[in-house]
Image (cartoon, rainbow, N blue to C red; front, side, top):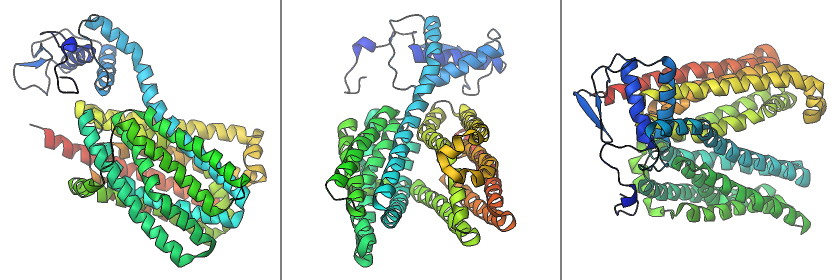
Length: 516
């Protein structure tokens, strides 16, 4: 049936034939049967129909481990590529298999690439705006801008926990009609969160007054659009269309930067107008979202959305808040214990690993919906997917740390940080250990979200956040700036153990639930 509900005669299957994706799946089933001694756990009867062919339990020829691995990768890729249309009048399954193998690297790079590219646009835009504001407005007004941005971050955590995180977990492998219905309610929920947070910001502006009050006034007026724009990003990644999210973020960037320049040239260079321009241009991108998705946010749908996903939403809200609070508490405590210079060195070391943060955040945009798709279509391969995510990110973090250790003394450090690079250089090794641990933990978090194991996920996150803060402070007391960095690294690796142990328990629980 076509999406419109009428039969699609041109793509109707002939009995006994399969398209490209189904041929790959059948091939994988055959390999799985032979490598497991001819027994397939998914079939208890004598024969099982797959797209018009029979997969029997009778012995089949042995295949090599290389063939098994190739067939697994091919089947996983083809099943995950739910948007690919098949043509049953095309080449034979053998030729289709070879053609799909040639497409495999391109598919993987494309899915990862859009996530990284989108996060790069978002992060670079925020970085450029911060630099422009501090150079234009000075320290006091930049401080107001920073307070507004922290408030925005807390509202964003609330919106993601209540709206977009449940969407990513439960609607990443659905048909377009189901996705549209879910997105209408998800984006409506995000807008309502923006209205509530905006009302709080407006009330704070009335109480505070002055320069800080004007910053919160601008933020309160624009928070609904900011929340809606972020919800479109996640909605597009849930659909597997990261290119749409990239275009939406790019639109925000290309409208924001000229707006800031225009404000400066017209004599409106103050924190109120800068924050208003930042939020208003996000509202422009948010207004384009319905045209891209063919979906209109449904504000009355918030009660239904929160009710249906209350087992996930509140826990993801607590999870995001715990992570933010832990990071802020660590920085404030270092400032109290070691002084503001120590905070500067810690932040400088974090800045040096900024590219890895962009990579990690971009990977999360794509990894969670991909893991959810793998879980629905081939559950036993989800753990392997998570291991590959953690392993790849950990290796990337280690490689970047090696680059910093080699390049900073040879001119890169002075070019990036000026004189600050020398006291920052001893922090590169513990910061690298921290980043590698952060990468190693990503797969565990991705798996827990894919399993919708929100209770285990929030418990693990709270324990990990507590360990991160405690070991960072113990390190600061015992070893100063270097000590707090090593303490953070120890905390990060404790988080690795906690998340993967939680994923192990969540996987066993899921496996027992689906076992016939």
